[in-house]
Image (cartoon, rainbow, N blue to C red; front, side):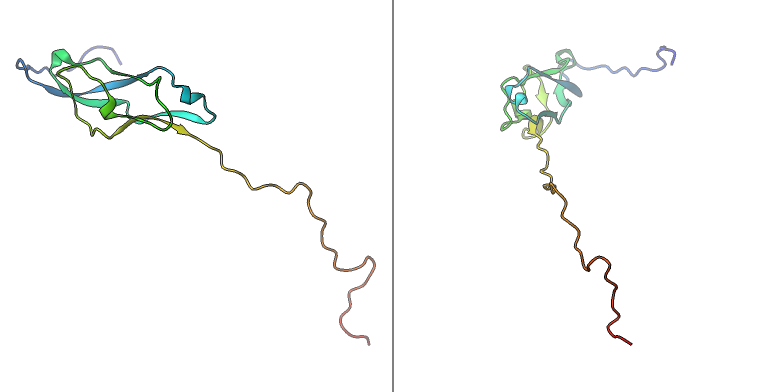
Length: 132
């Protein structure tokens, strides 16, 4: 890699023309729900498609998650964007949620192993069923 620009595509936009692009989603704040044992923040979407004029393109969409609970996820419909910016994703798509991870209960182990079953007395010879 040399750091030199080899190729660039340029496009002229008419005033008022909107373009579709992807914008990163940044989560801010720390929800109290993450203090629960096994709670993990899951960010399902890191980018989102928006339609807007090039001059109104947001650098990122910032979402405050400090009031988020494990029962309620952040959806696309909850995102706040500037006027003139349209989101091109389904409104019910999950952006972030808090998942409670629980370890599976293992089967209880026997504390003391049982004694082996004894089938014959010590020193006793096996019989073959008849005497000669």
